[in-house]
Length: 159
Length: 192
Image (cartoon, rainbow over all chains, first blue to last red; front, side, top):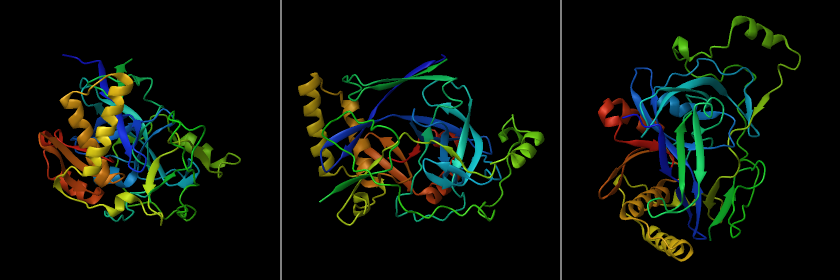
């Protein structure tokens, strides 16, 4: 059965000091690695992002195909100059049909940068942006709470 | 006392709740990568031919190098703005002060407290009581965030709660390389 529409819950993020619950949207994707295996990765759906991005070190650890050379001179990413590899990801949306989407993706940072696993990594995180995505999938945010979706939902539809 | 710091915003705050005001700060003063030497690239990776952008060609690459101002850094807007991270009085993220258990995560009291408050709010404001499945999803999500907010974590849901399998990209890399496709489909990887 082909599933062309998916509804996922909007997630709550607690602010422990105040008791507030912030809301965010995440989507589970499967990304094709260099050997053809599908690796799971969670992306934050961000309509404020012009481009989908992943940290390069993370893409490397998952054996995802990544351009050899970075963009000459780097890019200013939201105010910070960074090393960027302009590539693409081959992705499936978990819970929808097995269509393989090709999304442009910027791999940000040094893929070989050492990182202490005992400290949270610095931004950026996985973001699913607009370019090359919204011409294939339609996203609808609905904050209406329900018993099954207490903070509302994100609907994803094939265009 | 916990404080809240936000990343540098771009545009108006997306928050609609009036009770929470971001304490906006400029981006962390991490020295930007020196990209002028051309030595920052990592180990070259073989890339499938299809990984190259289809619209790129030699003529375009040559032209790009000779355009006036081509050396100027272009900007890309990635991320809509504010991401909140709670810190202590010394500016240390609170999540760093919490234990980092592996395996099945114990649900901390803080999660029970904040979830009870949230469900009371949902009942009072919207007249709804989350289903047991929705309640469990919130417990698992809040528990993951309590221990591992901002970390790269491989985990999977179980009937007893959320199970952490690996933390950090190197550990995650070793984990997934040991797994076959069927096992990979049962786990999730992301930053809580």
